[in-house]
Image 1 (tube, rainbow, N blue to C red):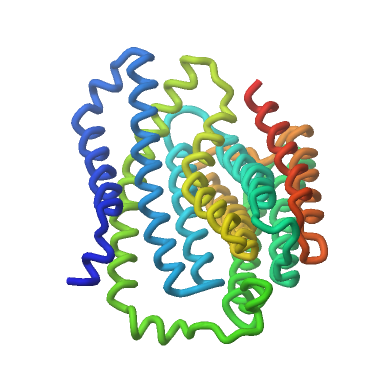
Image 2: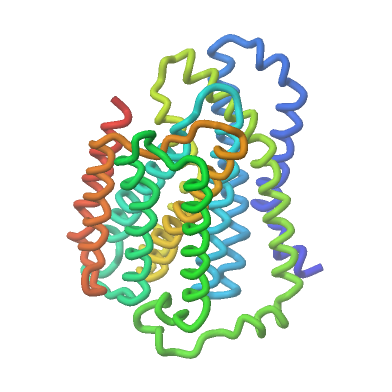
Length: 367
C-alpha cells in the first residue's frame, strides 16, 4: 500500500485521468470537430496539445522518479528515451496522417536540436550558481562526437543528395547504421565507461549497484513503469487526432509547415527542459549534459531511422535536407556547443552565444 501511495500522487493521477478523458472526449466529439469552423478547430487543437503536454509531464515525472532511484547514467537514459519515444510517436502519427508532411521529421528534429543546444544548454549555463564549473570531459566529448556523426548523417549528407534524402536500400542501410551506432554508444555509456557520465567530482566514487536497487525497490520500479506506460498510451491515441487537427488548422491559416515540427518539439522537450533547468540551478552540470546532449543523441539516433523505415514501407516521401541557412545555423550551434564545454570547463559567458543562435533560428522559421 505504501508503494501505491508513493506512486499514485495527486499529480500522477491528474496526468493519467486527464489523458484518458482527452481520449474519450475526442472519440465522442470527433464528427463535430471534423465539421467545425476554423476557430473551433484551433481551439480543439490547443486543447489536444495541452492534454498531450500534461500527459507528457506525467510520463517525465515517472521517468524522473525512476532516474532518481537508479542514478546516472541509467536514470538520465531512462528519462531521455521516454521523451524520445513520445517524439517518435508524434512524428509517426503526423507522417501517417492526412496531408503531405515530407519534412516533419526534419523540422521536428531540427527544432529539438536548436532548442536543446541553444535555448536549454545556453540558459542552463547562464543560471548555474557557479561562474565556472567542470563537467566530465570524456563523457561530454563522447556525446558531442555522436552528435556530430549523427547530425552529419541526418542533415549534412542529405543536403548534397539529389532527392534530399536516402531512398531504397540506402535508407535501410543508413537506418541500420544509425541504430547500431546508437546501440554501441549505449553499451559504452552503461558499461565500462559509466563513470564518464557522472558528476565531475563524483566520477571516482562508488555508486549504487543497479541490481541492489532492483532488489530493494523492485515493487516501486514496477509500479512506476506501469504508470508511465498507462500515462503514455493516451499520447499515442491522441497523436493521430492532433496531426489531423494540425494539418487542417495550419492549412487554413496558411502557416509555415515547419511550425508543425516546432509544435512537436515544444510538446516533447518542455517537461525535460524544466527538469534540466532545475538541475542547472542545483549546480548539477553533468546532469545537464546527460539530459541535453543525451536527449539529442537519442532523438537523432532513433527518430531518423524510424522515419526512414516508415517512409520506405509506406511509400511516403521523406525529406531530410534542410535549406542552406538552417544547415549553417545548425553547424554554428554544434560549434558553439563544443566551445561551451571545451576542456571540460563551463562558464556563464559561454551560454550567451547558444541563446543568440536559438533566437536567430526561431526568427527564421517564424517569418
